[in-house]
Length: 565
Image 1: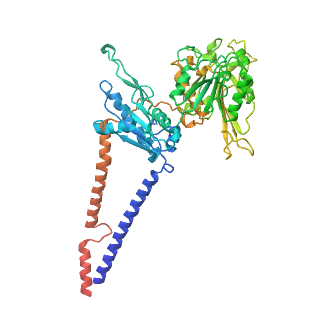
Image 2: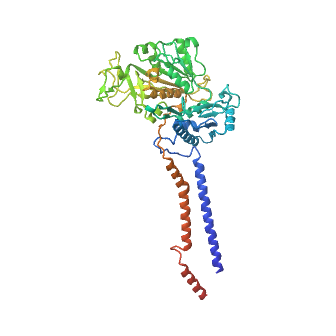
Image 3: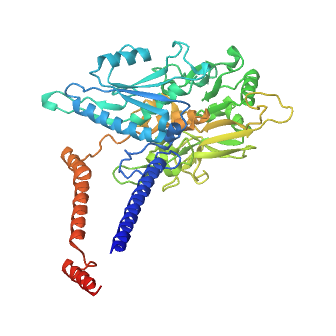
């Protein structure tokens, strides 16, 4: 009998050991899974929301995982006065959720601090650290550059570069419709677009990328002015404003007046010249390209000016042919939907995502299913691929019915039998890599370590798509502004900075009562139910189960065994 009790104790100890070991293994597995889930290179997140509000754009993700150092985001949110309290709260809530998603992507490189606006002492201390005076309802993105060359010379040593992202306004978290307070025609304030991801990413890039790239606009050949915003509608003032807002520096360049291009020039933009470049200017451009330079070229619409400028021959020197005709697309009659031709309106081509190639310039358009307006463009064709490079069409004229054609001069805006009625390339992205050779001069392009560098050129069939008349038109400007940023960002090796489409301003959220009920069920009811089930199972096992004999039968059996002994 004592031996039986001894075996029983050992068995119970073994069972307890198994239970403890199983619990320890389960806890270790949970901790290991959580640790793996926190590794940016291992975890996978899937956004199941209809509007994509629980994820960030691929370009944003690329920036976040490659941050050059710690980036701090200070959140200074406070309620807005009536009647803007609701829209302000919506933007603040969506921004807070977005920051959490960004934190998951960036890991420890992104530090987020939410300040209590009632803590006056803490607010003043942080303002002093950032060297800022005023404060509004905003985020402040800051980064302390490790290299001396990347620091802002206007800031004292140890003070980070910082960028303010306001709640509403220019380059803000959201675009606001203030509504109409008139009682007779009241309209409540509303969010026109939520641009939080785009605004925060732009601020991150501005504080981490050091000195801004320089874009030089050629002048002296009849080009539209890029530094006059309210001048000629055929100018490029709005383009220049878009680029400076995106973190570029801009200058004019004339080879006859300035000589060679500046050493820090990243891109030379030659937009619709009307007269040819001199031999001196041509040599300057060749020297610029030999040093790893980049070009953005846009042909004038007029076939006579195209030939007079010599830009057609310049295109051909890189293996790209340009047609003197204009690519046209029939328009649809509003009443009958029948194709209509015979007027200059057919020269306004609309390129849909299906007409765009897979490329960083057009990728956001395909992701957002957004069209691009291409007015009065010449057709392009890659006649020769560059050595150690690639030339590819990124925008083409429509292939869908009723198709497109090249209207040859003199223009009658009607597809004639002798005219080309096949889809045409409208924008070509051209790149050429080259490596250092033995004995070659060590320049920015040919380094002694043999690193392959690239020339990059964007060929545009027309500069009209970047003119003020298009970018300033509310019907076409919103479609072409991202393209303007994208092509210059690609030309300067900043593919990660391509434009991001605005998020849906209206997100359907569950009512507060539903959210509260879900939280109660998840945090209280489900765990309590599990505990009650465990207590019930334990109680039933103590009373006996189907595999255990009744207590009376067990006792009689023991008595009989004892009497026999």
